[in-house]
Image 1: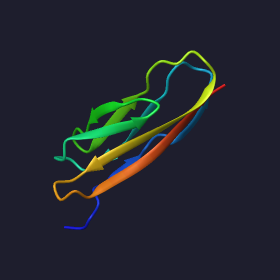
Image 2: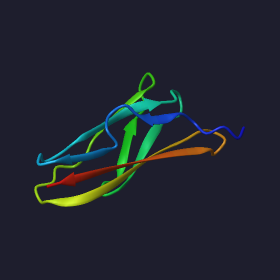
Image 3: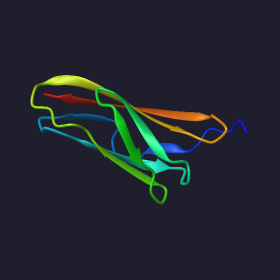
Image 4: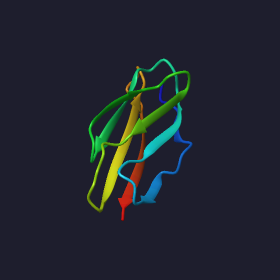
Length: 88
């Protein structure tokens, strides 16, 4: 198996806001476990019924932040999507 799992954004992948947090959402391949979060935050979020959602940690200072979301299948194939948030 050399096919990467499905992992996409349905929300914006690049946010610019004055708020203290944003939520990334998307579609994913069910049955593969959790999506691993990296970058500014670290952790994981479940792929549930083909969708995922991740709210970043609260930030109260202006800065540019980067996030990666990775889904890996049983054969070791991975898909990575990258998101960003500029709190201004």
